[in-house]
Length: 203
Image: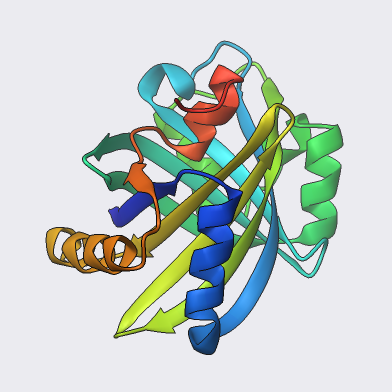
């Protein structure tokens, strides 16, 4: 189970101000490309699940994920997540020809997709497309913070994320920090994938 605090920043100015404040604690910046897949008959999405290939820094490495049963409330997100490293060249080939994913026998994720979700009985996967994300990572007061600028075809969103074992406590710490520095925010109430599927920015 992945548990994260997710706070949506209201605009690019808020994102830039927070980036400037956190700059002494910056550890790395990741350029991510996220591509999603489902069964041809929506076998995954009908059960609140999705497959994702994430490419880092163009083609430096790739991660295959299965996310399922997401719940987000008051800025705290909980979801089942299973991740595996994935060959970049095979990943790129799968974007063009999604059926190739089901032919990867070494993946526990894809085995689960075939057996638990019934995808592949007819050999059909579809690529849903995706979006790009620039993620700045910080080590701040014992927390690993991720400041995201997510670029969709229909606009850009900004979000502060923090994976947490004590999300209520950490959310309060982050809220106080943002409020003290006059940074406008709200609780995220929808995942990036859900924003992508809706084809419109959150209100």
